[in-house]
Image 1 (cartoon, rainbow, N blue to C red):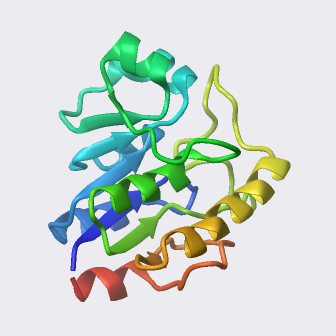
Image 2 (tube, helix red, strand yellow; image 1 turned 120 degrees about the vertical axis):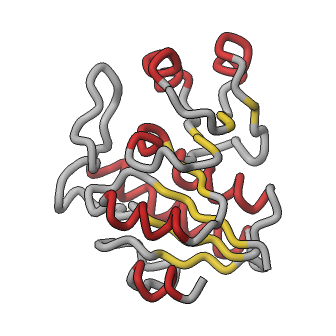
Length: 180
């Protein structure tokens, strides 16, 4: 079974949990600025051109860089993931799709809080970029739920310390990473 880890930027994400994931030896896709808390990642995914425009010069990681933005591909040389970009989507959701594209049959999630209850991101607010609103977070629940039908052969497990996302089974990071 091919396993992947996707690490988003929910406020429950911690370096301790990222270290657990890194010790598993599984490939890791960091979403947006989460590469900073998990520099051991093999991939960085950010769907938005605006994120790449603001951050591309500051990325010190040697991880493969991926986006859904043709403009970011052209201007910054990141890899283009063109799969399923019509309609609403978010970078965390697209990272899961990218893992599936790479052949993942089991995807473990960290930092997928899908809530503003405990803050915006583990790193605080984005400066000069959009931050999630209640309406957007509500839409994310629908975005993620669509993956259940879209990826029926992929087991997706949410190991975030805190989550309001109910479409995937939930477990604690210690339970899942000690079993890897």
